[in-house]
Figure 1 (cartoon, rainbow, N blue to C red):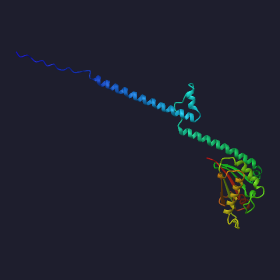
Figure 2: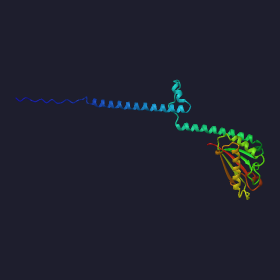
Figure 3: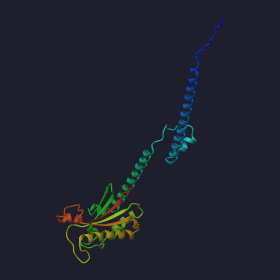
Length: 244
């Protein structure tokens, strides 16, 4: 009798999923390790940046390192905000310096200011000292007359140690002038501005800070149709230019 062959079927392995699960857990663990490492590096970079900015602007970083009781902010201010703050502080200091200089100029020139011969005004451009030409020059001339030297020397005394640039402008009315010295109002206004600049230099104002400009009759401040307006237009304007 033939012996019946027995076929032993391989039983199905129900635990193969454990291998895939273990691989997944390993990859997940590696992912979190990498994420943790990256977060630690970024925190270090933020701390270095915060400390550096603190040292540069007010010593905040040094204080947080040396005093454990001082709490640090989560993030430092953006660099653009710090720069804007510094610019605002600089503009405030500049305005205060110009305000003080304007008060001093008004005080030194008080008699002429009160008589209407001199005007001290402030704008965004700076401080302008407008001096009527009759205070400084004879009609049609560019040589300093009367007490003009004393007046300009008093102004120069306030400006010689001031750091601002200075622009001196000569202005005339529309009345034509024609002589051997000044063929037109252009020459007259330019030479008058140069005369004031030279006196400032003689009284200690550094030459590099000065500029002379002749405007002729092109920038009137009053009507040229009457004598009072023409007298107003004949002037020298000394502008202390704001740094900003």
